[in-house]
Image (cartoon, rainbow, N blue to C red; front, side):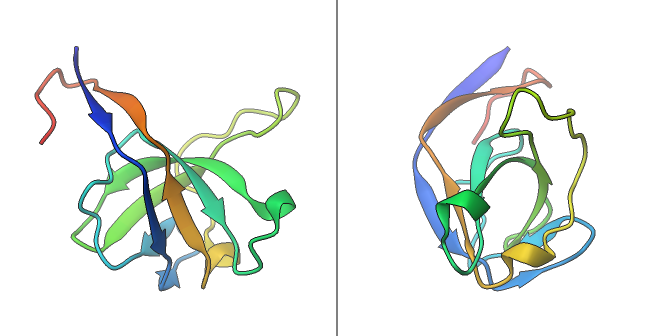
Length: 106
């Protein structure tokens, strides 16, 4: 299984959809299956949510799915409504990700 160490990135979110897509200045350096933190416009810690990038749709759009912050929460799958994050930011921490297709990641 091919993997890659990816770096820390933060971008402002300029547009969102209820179907789980966000628009940022550039998706370069963001990868499918990476864990990210979604921060709303208030940047209140209680409103920050753990999420995963479900797809890199274009040079400026990412698909995002919220994930459980609490082990007691029911699991979440797929993309999630992103309307609460309009004007907020996305933060990807440094991490090792794997490519399930077993192809090298750029």
